[in-house]
Amino acid sequence: MQGGSSGIGYGLKYQARCIADVKADTDHTSFITGTLSLKEENEVHLIRLSSGGTELICEGLFSHPNEIWDLASCPYDQRVFSTVFSSGESYGAAVWQIPELYGQLNSPQLERIAVLDAHACKIKCILWWPSGRHDKLVSIDDENLFLWSLDSSRKAAQVISKESAGMLHYLSGGAWDPHDVNSVASTCEWSIQFWDLRTMKKTNSIEHAHVRNVDYDTKKKHILVTAEDESGICIWDLRMPKVPIKELPGHTHWTWTVKCNPEYGLILSAGTDSSVNLWLASMSSNDDLTSESPIESPTRQVDPLLNSYSDYEDSVYGLAWSSREPSIFASLSYDGRVVVESVKPYLSKK
Image 1: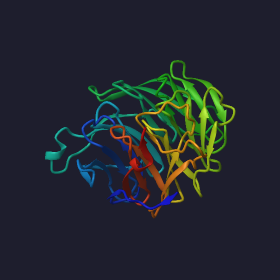
Image 2 (image 1 turned 30 degrees about the vertical axis):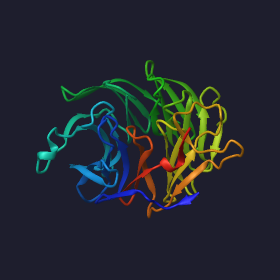
Image 3 (image 1 turned 180 degrees about the vertical axis):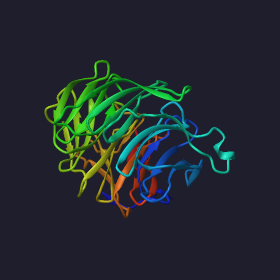
């Protein structure tokens, strides 16, 4: 199904790649995003969906000194987030805090809580402990995984352990298993590697080419979704990792990112074909469904592509489901355009 966008838009001043749900904000549907300007001072925007759901409001606008390549919101403190950034050829990573009374300040400044300065290689991403209040972070660079302990009161982060992925592996990203907090998946050119954080040793791997992005299904154990250059989207059961249990066609160009819905059996994907696709993750009648479930017919095979949002003018690199309202997602195209959409038309009451 093809469709344009009926969503709510918000424009950033500069180009951008990353957006995140502010999970710790339980009172509002909020997102945080950062820009990627080479020549100008970059910005972090804190965006809130209005109570009527008709407009996106800029709750806070903050200067950030470098190009932002990765951004993640702290799951237990809505004013804390992390960025991976670059300046020329050098990369860095830091944890930031938004000032408490930022709405009353003329030009509020971000407070840098900690610098993750142990990396010698190009940093790819920072992962927060999946849920609840915990001081652990994982950072991934080209060659290594680091496990950190964050002490916000002392404005410091300390490396607990580190492990190399090996000479033949070029790491590109990863995800923290929400069902097993001791397990992290990392992606590289030819495989997905699984790590036990207690020992920092690899426990398993899936040999599969050109994986760009990975996400865990937060509702079902053992389910992992990958975005790939050539084969689109693969859904894996980690108990049977030799072949995917389902393949989706993805995009007409590179499939860049995938996100599993936190409540419903839906997957979002985005790519360099300037579109966002909404997929039905499973068509099994035996799946555990919530009070609302994706529309499907009991008598015929359903096209897994529920909708394609195609009203973009540039590649779409950023996706985020709202954890507060799981029927809402935000997308971010490279030209700095944020669009918030509702998938309620594709859900039906049981």
